[in-house]
Amino acid sequence: MEYILETKNIEKRYGHFKALSNLNMHIPKGAIYGLIGKNGAGKTTLIRLICGLQKVTSGEYTIYGISNNSRKIVEARKRLGGIVETPSICLDMTAEDNLKEQYKIIGLPSYDNLQEILKLVRLNNTGKKTAKHFSLGMKQRLGLAIALVGNPDLLILDEPINGLDPEGIIEIRELILRLNKEKGITFLISSHYLDELSKIATFYGIIDKGKIIKEIDKDELEQNFRTRTQINVSNLKECVKYLEEKNLTYKVISDNIIDIYEKINVSELVIALSKRNCIVNDYQEKGESLENYYLNLIGGASND
Image (cartoon, rainbow, N blue to C red; front, top):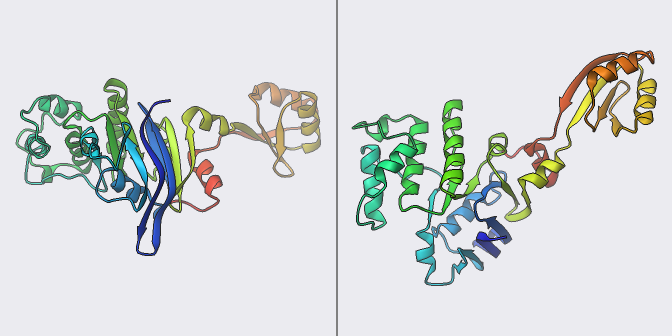
């Protein structure tokens, strides 16, 4: 597997405080890598290191195979764009002028692809409207547009949907998926909105106390999400007998509740149990979530 970014035993200290410790991360080319961790776990610190905003205390990371200890790392970083904490936009400028300013900052000789970028983030019709009059979602899309200047291969987004309303969240989600599919851009996304992250990420890294404690791809993760049918019955004994006869995997939750961990035809089950003097009072389709998997892994409470 080709990795666009790797870290090897990274450590970052602030005095005696160790923010990152022996951190190892691998971001596959073309992935949407979801970085998950509670506040203070080290997500933003890691992102700032990769973007060159801070230096590592020890260890190494590579971008496109180029080490952070190499002089060529400056050139490698030109192939990545990012939004760290908040988008870097000038509120008194239009969307177009904000992009032109970014072209100048990174030293591009012309405004090639500027209109294409504005169209891509759906800000091409904002005209002379300045950014201070944009909605939060529009500002976030403008931040993404600025990050796209220079045609990066890797986009790093720190909490990209923080504070957005449902419409804004959907817009950012669709934009990320489109950029990944159509432009082949790899993403590193730090977020504590785990339900939303699960809708776009293809690979996950879970960080806790400054270490990556688990890396897992979407397919493997979904295999860990055991879907089940939970039924509430009037006669537990007869229900268990039936499930045993059918060789179905189940778990007794209480005196009248059972989880069945295989696909079943509920209508057939209800009829079969009724013939055994067992009534199905209620049933629900249930499944594990990314949040549950994360919490079980770190053995803690919510990451908000």
